[in-house]
Amino acid sequence: MQPTLFGDVDNSMRAAREDIFGPVVCLLPYGDEREALRIADDSEYGRSGSVWTAGIEHGTDIARRIRTGTYSVHTSSPDARPVRRLQTSGLGRAFGPEGYGACLEHKTIHLPTGA
Image 1 (cartoon, helix red, strand yellow):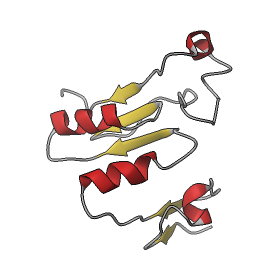
Image 2: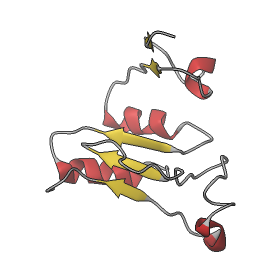
Image 3: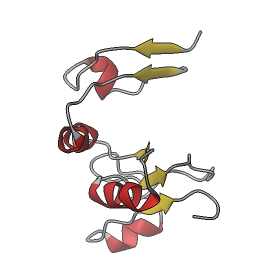
Image 4: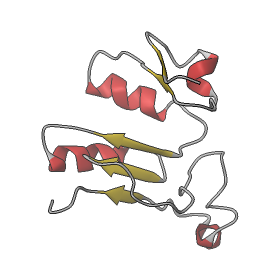
């Protein structure tokens, strides 16, 4: 399959709500940062994500506000281990050490080298 970009997608569309096997990216437009955060959190899975901003501090603030288990700031996750997940996906919480702290929400934030 060739890399595919689905443009002008919204979170009501199947392409945005379900995992797609293959090199696929969905582009969801947004008006401001508040709307972008709302869109990012509008998922039942809470797996992982990344943000690229004008500054590491701002990116870290965004990472803290997103409900996801692993989040990268100005980088991608170098970690090959299973993603720490939140919300209904369960993996990492139910089958890993996170299962012991069901009342906690663990998060990993990756920063670029030297930040």
